[in-house]
Image 1 (tube, helix red, strand yellow):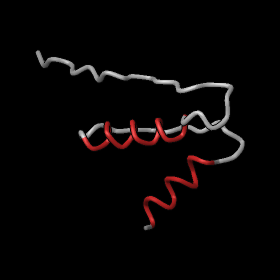
Image 2 (tube, rainbow, N blue to C red):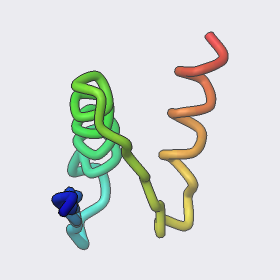
Image 3 (cartoon, helix red, strand yellow):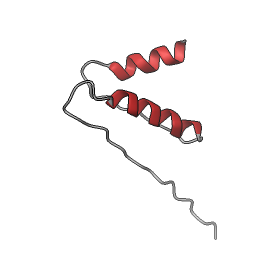
Image 4 (tube, rainbow, N blue to C red):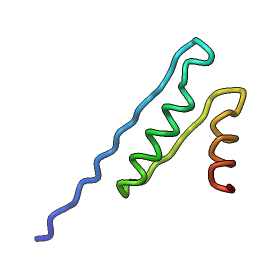
Length: 62
C-alpha cells in the first residue's frame, strides 16, 4: 500500500492598527525567504492602500 504524503500548511497573519509599522515590509520579506526555500507562497493583502501589490509589482518588473 502506498503511503500518503501530507502537505503541511502554515497560515501567518501580520496585523497591527498602527500605520507605518512595517507590516508590508515584514510580509514581503518573509514571503521571499520562504519562497526562496522552494515553498509555495500566497500573499493576501487587505490594506486599502495596496502597498503590497505596488511593492511586489515593482520588485518583479525591475
